[in-house]
Image (cartoon, rainbow, N blue to C red):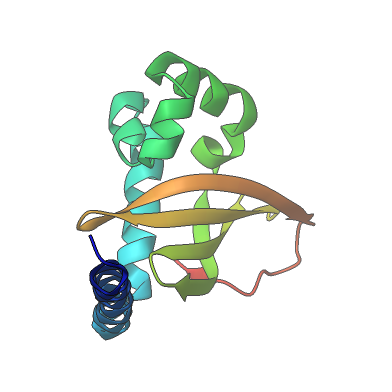
Length: 153
């Protein structure tokens, strides 16, 4: 095959790839980000499942990456061991929300009956047409009597 044909084919495929990159970027930028209440709803549904001890339902709100990392029994054991404050909270409040493409971070305060609060950062990821919880990071505790700057739910 002559060099000019090889070069032309290579140029054609590189141009095709570049066009695909530009089109996919344009399509992604046109998709509107979710309203914060959509993200809050995912967190609330998982928390309701935790409170009802319905760990299989809570597990369905976890991202596929989390489900690959933990089996359902391991997930339940982790929640019971490390996140008991989530199931015992008197109320929750939402703080800041940051959305970047198909990823989001939501600050959640778990308020106890004594007025204390624990702060968590929820990482969410868009999977298909829904949002899933990809991770939870414990933040600082708020002493009793000190109000958090969250949205009361």
